[in-house]
Length: 474
Image 1 (cartoon, rainbow, N blue to C red):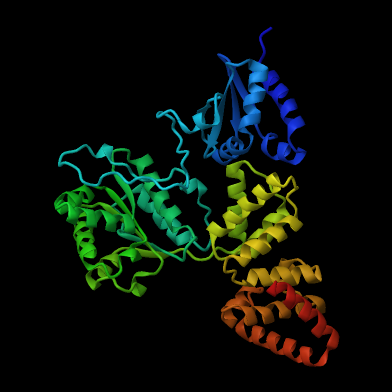
Image 2: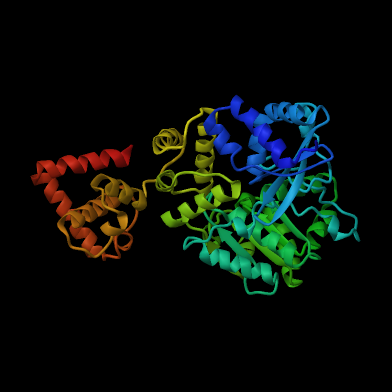
């Protein structure tokens, strides 16, 4: 009797459930759906590439045995991976041996080496070469769809989207994006490149890190092929130079980039440059190059606020097809405030720890993981974090603490939040006031004085302020 794909997969699930922990089964096999069974190949749909990689790494042997049990020795498994919630791409997963999974068909549309270094294409081309042969070096995961917009990055994101719609034709040329590490400037710059490729397939887009550019230039000098090097970059329609600050002090490399910049700009080509500092603060960059950076728009990406951090986590979870309790998501967002990269890394660590140790994702698990995580990173105590600690201690929602109510217990909680914000952050009194219910700096100053006076005169007050401080400093 001919079996259908749902029956086969349900039979597989019964075997898998008997061989792994219930939590792991729920997390990693619950979201999977059987798609089709054709020519002895079972196709299953997984929510994301992250899902695919995890299953391949941890459950591939069990899957192979189960498929062979149901379909015979010639049975095979194929994944349908949902990418960007739009397209589904099939990936053949051989069922012969583990090492075979590393030999992917060359026609496979997905980059399974995500996170690994890629070899940069030979930048020296023969004049007249078709530009379509140039590898753009863009990561398909760094799209606008995956970039969460907030107050912290709205200007940069809006300018970037405008550039992508009309590259080289806006006043944002060059578009200079700057921020501290881990706040999304590489993601945004590549999102612009991907959008340009979608809108203008005929245009050549190139993403290059400044250190790669430097290395290529050194090789061109060694090989006496500097003219070819320059010619290569002059045929680019949209050039994205990441981490331009790496060229500080490299005057000859800056001279070459200056000439390339001028050629592209004069010919209506788009330049996108990223740095860890704004142009005015870049040291070791020649004045004439700095002046070029100021021709267009310099836009910064700031540290995301609490709401944006929560949105980033929810977006990442949705994209990867994962689930996490809301209180854990909030705790993560409160605990890690200075880097989106670290925030997402902590989320993945919690998911991995839950699966490998067969534990549910709970607030206690998150606390233990984050305590270890932040000890190895520099955690900045933020106003958001302080407000959360005070809110939890008094069991008063943050929005109530920041409201206009004059109830004694709420005013007291608000004053303590202001006091610790002044003590543990570098924010101005005015900034603290805006964050704590849109109060002015005089209100914050008054709150700090009230707390200091009560600490000197009220033993019980001193006790619970001390308790809150311990929680903040943990």
